[in-house]
Length: 128
Image (cartoon, rainbow, N blue to C red; front, side):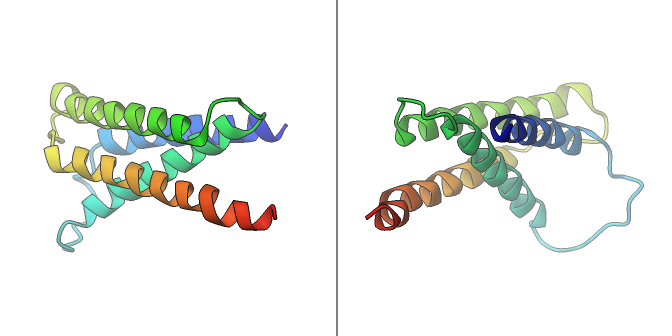
């Protein structure tokens, strides 16, 4: 049951990112905070990495945390680049931005680092 919850959360968040990156926000009032969208992108992919990590770790897989994190960060990076290409190819109100892809990757890497620190130090201390 818990595994199904995290699968739903991870899949839903993945779809949510695509929707938020591909819909038009032209009708909304403009907020003038410099580069805030980069922090939003990083936050999206930070949570994406956490959700997929939790789902993939439930069930006692024999694959190491490092291998899972590497796979998630790689797939998240490819997904982020694909979304940027989709913005350029399929929308009229959005454009691809290399710095959005960098922010996506940064959010994913930040989550992977924090998860690694947690697994290596915090979880080890609790299990002693």
